[in-house]
Length: 131
Image 1 (tube, rainbow, N blue to C red):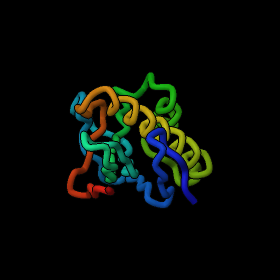
Image 2: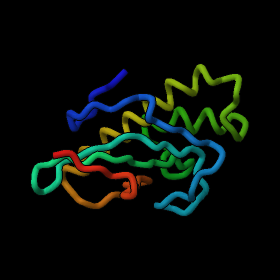
Image 3: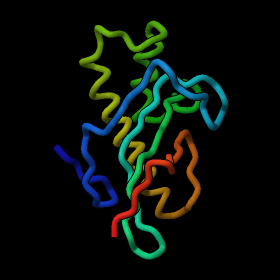
C-alpha cells in the first residue's frame, strides 16, 4: 500500500520504522527522547531530479509537548513512563498521525530552506537519486 506525501512521490507505509527502545537525545534541547521514527522522504535537487532517502524524527517530551500531533503521544507515554503494550491500539494511530505531520512539515520546510532541524535529520547514507 502506498501513500502520497506532499512531494507527490509515493511512499511505502511498510518502510516506516518506529523505535521506542533506543532513541538519540533531542537535537534541540539534548534531553532524552521517547520515540524515533524513520520514514521515506524525497525532494527535488537543483537539476530537477528526485532524490529519495529517509528522514528520522524524534519525539521529545520537552520540545514536542505543545505540538498538536505529538501531544497525544507524549501524554500516552507520561501515563506510566513508557508506551504500554496494552495500548498499542491507541499508540498506532497516534504514531501514524505524528509521522505524517513530521513528513508534511519536513516537506514544507525543505521547499523553503536547505537546513533540517526541530528533531529531524536526513540520513544521507541511504539517499538514492532518480533521473
